[in-house]
Length: 475
Image (tube, rainbow, N blue to C red; front, side, top):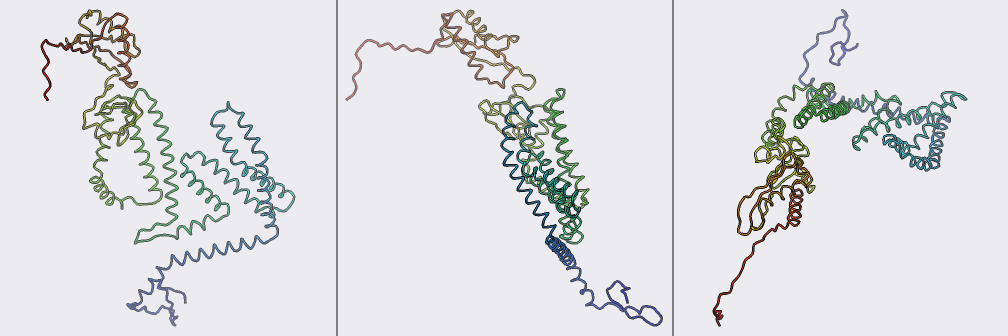
């Protein structure tokens, strides 16, 4: 009799047709089911593997049929012919590409990719030609395998050209091989079998279950969503950076917030699409957050300092700053540090916390105008009025010195050997350097003083020998 109790046992029929009373299970009855439940996934994997092996055996056996072997031979011959065509036509095509100097770069890149894939392109063209001809002159079954090979080769070519849009070499290869594997399984009709095999290869712990199929789905879905988020982020960032109505610091802040938002939404949608319950991760994420807060205090401090800098607009990209011995202009503002480029080409990565806690000289905080001072002295015999006029005129004649903010020259003291002056002038491009403009103004002063006989004194000492005999040196 069939099992009517769900326990796996059968009972004999009685005369009245009713089932006999079921006695309570013995203490040693329950453990008998545990080995069956524990070994069930392994048994299913073994059965599925045997099924796939049987299909592969059937496929190899079918290859022994004459026309199937002929089709593989035709495919090999067409591959050899494609190699010959590539050898013969490759150099002329390369020479012709060298004459296309006026073409856009994107078109030349396409030509380069096509030239690198000439052999498989010729192979696909020859395969489809052979398939079409054979279907016209013989039974369709005699070109069935050739059609599958042509479909796979075409799909592989399409995948190669599509993945060329991915810049990262590692990501490009990963997507390419994954797409090739999926297309091959789909064309061969093994998609459902592969999905069952990946789903049965799982790790279970109580109610928690993770399979290879779930991992593959997670990688694909999250990868696609992250690529989409990156596209929207880059597109939106370019439009924001080109908007002159927004201050540079606010542009950086908006871009950072958009990046966090887009990537956060992509991760949340991906996790929900996979079917992972995020409520179970709340306690764990809270504990991890507390641990990170204690262990990464400096990192968090730099992150918060970066947000404060962007909000109060004290420092923005393009500002010329001095911090200790470092003088340069802000190249970029990151989440953790600010990039400062000096005149000698060095790039300093200054933590955002240092920009908040230390004294920073911002040469272009409210405007781009910077006043520079240089000191010089002339002899007491020179007219100070003429010296001041010559100094102002010399400064006005130097490039980068602003004329609408006229230079001024003042006497600041009477020194031991000279009358001391200060010359003040304004520039509006401190990123072009400060030492070089000071040097040019000094050189202009030298030329002006030389032409007008203005002397620049230097300390002199006179030594007078008094009369009398010099004391003799001791023995």
